[in-house]
Length: 359
Picture 1 (spheres, rainbow, N blue to C red):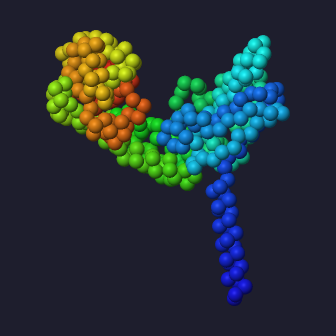
Picture 2 (picture 1 turned 180 degrees about the vertical axis):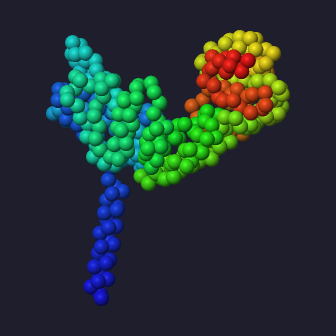
Picture 3 (picture 1 turned 90 degrees about the vertical axis):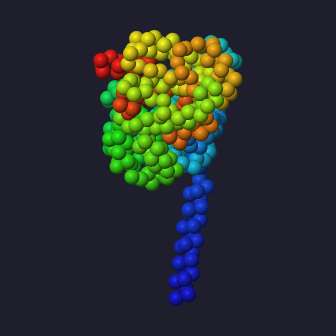
């Protein structure tokens, strides 16, 4: 009996050590590419904002030596990255050597990942490195093959999600879809909720998905406009939902003084409003935190709209808590005469197209 207890303790201890070893283990990315010269720089960059590393931050880098490179590190969860190689240092030493950059998307997990190619000269933007290693990368490679079969410009994300409901790649796409409110229908949000019930290999990404899903339910197309707190030009508190006109379309132009694209598009918005002045009201809502910069920009652009600026609470609700407009402005919302949101159009031309169809 005593021996059995000792044996049981030994087994528990062994599995504990194995578990600890697995937690400490990181990723190894290695490659020996025919024709890849020594001195080529190899870098691994994070390609996501929400998870570890931050978008475009360098996780690890090295240089090719004896025709071989190896990158080592650790991620807390599977992470979409970009593997970049360049021979700039070689070009500086010998200008007859043409500059070559390569960019390869890959999912990194704490496993051994192998980078392959027939030869270095054959690697291009259209034909990146072949990546092998890890469940997430296997799914991502399958998505890329599906994309190639359907055509470069055709969206296959929904098809992939429905056929891979527990994949890290699927929940990554779902998290992207759930951003920027009023772009999904109630049915689409419901489909995501019913399809992605768990992601065993990435609980952090799944937890983010659940948060975004709950918020997105209030900003589906066809739903009433969700309120944001604002101030008018005199500093008075205004609720966005209180200024929706009755019986007319409302275009809300979210912008900022530092956003060149927003200001560049303003004349088109002015023309649109004039073309549909009997049916359309436009308001401009600034995301500026610097009120002086907002006032100066208003004077400079001089557009004939009612102007408002988000309060601190409105700002937080716009970017994260409600609308989830994480990648900023310009951002437009078109509200119908019934007070319900038609959608968040991608630009002025899409608004014009919608209004023309509803004539």
